[in-house]
Image 1 (spheres, rainbow, N blue to C red):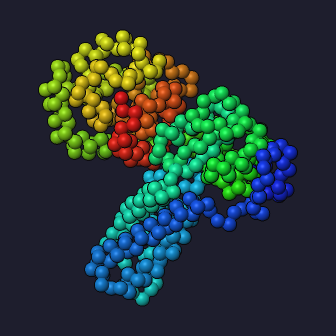
Image 2: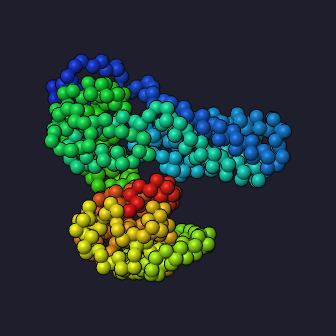
Image 3: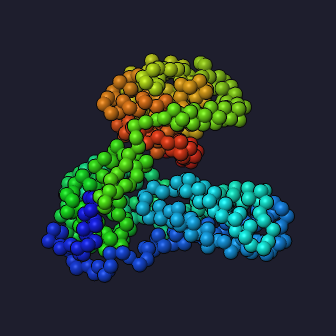
Length: 494
């Protein structure tokens, strides 16, 4: 569906309904644009607004402590008067609209726009205090305010989202259309409760196919309005693969009239990542993808992040690593470290380091165990008999991966990147999937954050492709931040 078609829809008014007739009459609002958000979005926006206001106010009070102005109520009061301006600034940076547009938005995604907004806002605050008849802001106050405001905004936004989710429950999503994309999205929503969304059903012409959710109607969508009303649908996700442009336009129009949020799964679903941007040429919508370039400066940034963080983590964790190595030696025969050849950047092999979690002769048992593997492309067992007692603990906590920080310092691996595969696993990947070798393999990455062994091999290759083709420094930082809760949840730990 193009921007020009949407423009034509607005110009010519309501579309005739010969294509898709509702099962029962539904009263549409008189305007295409609703005057208010739905209950969920309304309360979430209010919670975020209140959280941001409290964060700025507390940061203002903390800043006054830097120069011992805590008793100067005039100074603090004049600062609190700027809170409405801060909320307007946050709104300009889209900090209250992203949850409405996106299914997977979290407080981590707020970090870049919140940081940028606070930099601009702090400069404006400094200018504001220069213009009013009170002592100007000192450098220490500016620094304390900026740091505390940023920390408090992210923290209180996280709390506000959790509070809203607990009070309102998960968002109710209706899937519309056939194809693998709808089935895949249904499975991902079930596997990731942190998205706070639940698929209530699907409208599809392929009744016998397993979408993992109830089938609520057929591809003609004659009962679309009734289904939305009956199941309290808050968001509709439409698969572009199964529809012509006329049907897509009609479905989007219906969603708008019913006040339901809309997301579209495009045909390039597997290839496009989070770096896609919307552009337009005279009303024609154009999707912009990342250029196929990873500049020298970008590689230097990535390497600097690897060396600094890996070095710090190794120093801080050294006592724990020594205890783990000593425990492994005490509880089973064999070396504490396990070394294995893996395929790295450009197809070059390297030796990966891990803490040994299996019995000493585990490699000789692989061929026999492969007969019972849940995945034909790699060895995946519900309970691997080769894993030792301490090895099971190390795997569930992901501590067995920590020696890979040495690989990072050597340059064989990166903190974030595609999963390093064995040669036998790498050999089954062909075509566009080979682009996963364009970047250095990582200790963590999309596969590790989103579910590890709970994600099939073919899907892992797609995730690696998305990572390589959409790389940015913020992507790496975001995945590092998401690794900690992913490890704590233990999802997909084998």
